[in-house]
Length: 268
Image 1 (cartoon, rainbow, N blue to C red):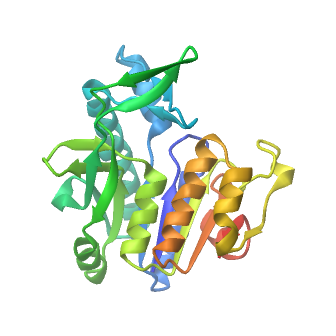
Image 2 (cartoon, rainbow, N blue to C red; image 1 turned 60 degrees about the vertical axis):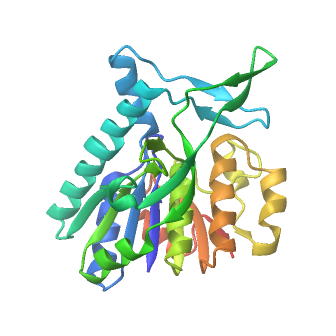
């Protein structure tokens, strides 16, 4: 069983990703696809007059500040438009895709962050009213039921809080949590770079292999920004018992098959 994460920052070859999934399914592979929606959310938010706001945490992480209006736009774009376009294309390719978000059937339960501690203009600040969270539980039984019935789950990164609220959650960590909960054979994270780069954004500095026991070392040394979140997700997946994790290029032809053939960064 394979979990695939298609990043949401634009530039990915969605047609090729869907084609690879269709080929894997025809060969009898069970696949779960997790997708993002950051780029599209930024575009739609701008058009609706509520542009995205990004903040930097005290530890240096950059993330979207998700007020209620932003949450509703994010949910509309990811769980609505993008999710259903992927389902449509896979259905056209003969794959019985089943689109859902973490809200549906409490697939992804998360704890809402009480506040964000950020740095703005060099000063620490506490932001409240954020509708994001960290995943604490995956309804693996629901996914297993869908997979056993021949469906291919397509998961949008919107979770449900313990109080029943919708929450924005990080797609890479969603994929990591799902792959760990299902004890997947592998997790492939497709992005708009060829893998983990020793000197970002120089694509000639690709790191081809990271042993499991050195992943946290690489997180400290090389991963920054979005890549830091991706590598953090891979560490969580490996700790959860996933057989292998690959960070690979989602812009190329046959991206999943290329990743399985050795392209990208293998953590394992």
